[in-house]
Length: 192
Figure 1: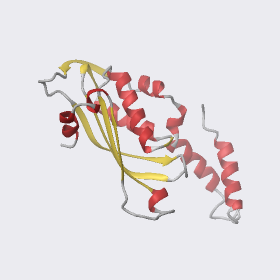
Figure 2: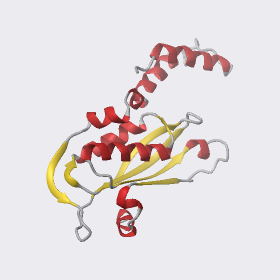
Figure 3: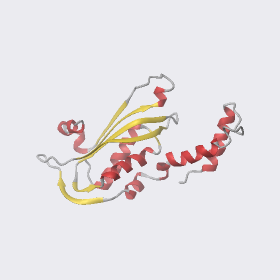
């Protein structure tokens, strides 16, 4: 599915008129086209399914890393910066920090690919909870590991800039799959 920039321009022009402004005035004349280009960029992830994103970033390395009850092998990438747009208000979700962890099963994914997955998943109309679930699903597809955890902390402008207007409020979500959902010791290691 390709993003229809012409339709976006037309609708943004209509929104400007509905707000009581003149879309042909100098400050707004190019706004519909600018918004269409911005939407093409920030919603790029809407062009791809989770399976397509997994194929796009499926760069793994065979490794003897294997998690065991006595072993310590866990891959953890912290503080991945992302932003997204809430599907309920089209409002910005910002200052989002993502932590992704998985227990290797004989192969590891390139570390930059984890950040790229988080970035691409966030480029959709989203819910924070679904971002975590989508990242976990894609990492699991690529690594073959069912043991995946995704933690996300972020601010939502639908709460901070409108409605209840509570700046500084953060939303924290956890997606815990496989052993991360049952093993308290693994959950504790996510916070370190």
